[in-house]
Length: 440
Image (tube, rainbow, N blue to C red; front, side, top):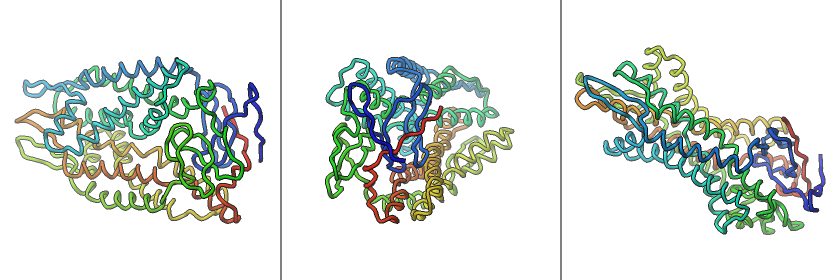
């Protein structure tokens, strides 16, 4: 249903928002606190109305930074074996893995479990403080581009689950007592999950409403293709030929659609498929004891958890480490192969499938985190020592490649197929703005 732009306060039109899944344009209308606005065409959640103001999110972010410091400074667990005592922390585990010669695994864990979550909190705090101050610096757009890219790679919830799995695996090896770091990581997981509501798009919307930045869609030119910046969401006109341009608001490259989408996505899927075999066939962990050295594959770790009586964690690890990677590969291949228009309902189902692939993307990193943590928790020279196996790096790369493949895929291509079937240009939807549907 077509919906004309309405004039808001002070005679200004409402900002526009483009659905990232189907490219349908909407007006960003006010919604009640706690409500969410969904795309009328594909039902994707476009934005939510938070209970907290930017100053409230500053308090949550500061709390998360304090908890982050506690989680990484205090031991996750204390283990005792044959008179030796070991206190395990995440930074120690990363350094130990690096010293053991597994640099790739140490880098991935250091980035996804420590550096990027910390950077996300620092950038978010900076952006919130500038927003509360009411005057944005000239480099605000650059900082927000960095912030927008971080949440997908910040894996504190996955790390928390890895900590629980590692503790269960070592419970029969040594006397184990949980440390303050474990509880700090649990609180940090809750806080980081909550802060996803205060992401880059939320901050841009707040800046728009405060009149600190140009409103999305405020300078559209008649007859030119329309695209939305993938970083800040600003709807703007492109050159007549649809060539890439720089975002008027944040400076990022703006494309009508993701360039060479199919080739890039297929390349990542092919690379992840090749690496999936050594990741599952080669051991991800080596256990050295006085009785000898034993190698453990991902499936072997699942069986071990089951035999220890932790059937619930065994199921979680099996799903996260075996089912999820396969699901992502098959789902991405299916989406790339089935881009012909088969009706709105079929395309909505494909959109939901893509959203599911994006949601489960980072959870496959679970086994890499488990190996890193076990190497630190079971480092008793002469009695037991756990090191990463050759399969750990391959498995981590599978996770990275599947995530990059999902990011390279453009779900708007399926909806473009509808326009192609009608004989119209995909960008012709800038002539109508469909009303949003609000749900509590």
